[in-house]
Image (cartoon, rainbow, N blue to C red; front, side, top):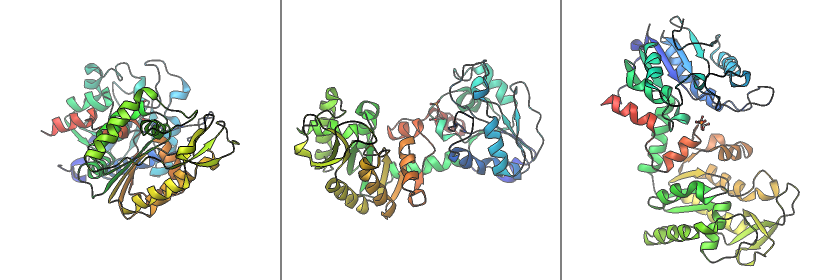
Length: 390
Ligand code: 3PG
């Protein structure tokens, strides 16, 4: 809660752990730079305050000590230079010392190349802590990892604090889940219940409406006694789905089960799409989207929501003929007066496809971290900062 002022940053050596883990194409061009842009405010503020700024991030999952060109943050340094309007030099070997002047920003090469980073070695964390006066963790996307630059260094640095992006993420997610304006509606969609079972169980205790989609919805349809043909589902989790439906009903809350669906006979971009009542799915059908009646009902619920948490598209939206359900819900979220928060790679792709980014209340930069927050877990990188604050 204590804020560090610009004056306190002046002349200080500031080490910022950001999450600059962005996708690149085979030629090394950055294909999506949201995380870099989201990291700029902390870096710019520190630079403008006259700090000597060291920034690092991981990129991918390289092997420690084995540098390969594709592991390099060089493309990120270039993009960061453009965004800041001043050159950001990339420093290859930095653990034993970094030459950086007040008002200058340097990018320290992929921190996961350092031995001990992933394992959160104290020895490495202590060395990194010695590089700086102030350690700033602004990497929400990596807050679920306890590594040397996200956890260990926070124990040893003279001062350790959260950066503005990390703070904003925690604020938005906390507001949506812990003090939501009601009704609180969550969309949890994706191919498998198993990967999101903890989230479903956690949210079933909190939300007023739990909208399920994708393969997850298919398992819930099985739980509701419907046939789903050849659709992707996890029959061994039907009992878990039933328990969630029952728990929600007991709380006076609901898990809306699709009343109609869009089916195809094969998973392909050219597969023909047919709308069917949920009760009419044939043995050789595969459900690839919610139907228009279901989408309209859910859109209406989203329109009345006080808070919306969105993770996952409700259909195979990459194929337009199976994208209408996701598009309808995306537009309903955009139009809803409720506060909305969205996160996860596929969700961000849907937001981009339907061009609604400026109408979503908060878009998280977290993938796994966003999911773990929804699971109700304490993120280790946040936990250690809280400990330090005490
Ligand atoms: C992410 O992309 O979700 C984060 O950058 C974390 O990456 P990781 O799963 O390799 O730790």
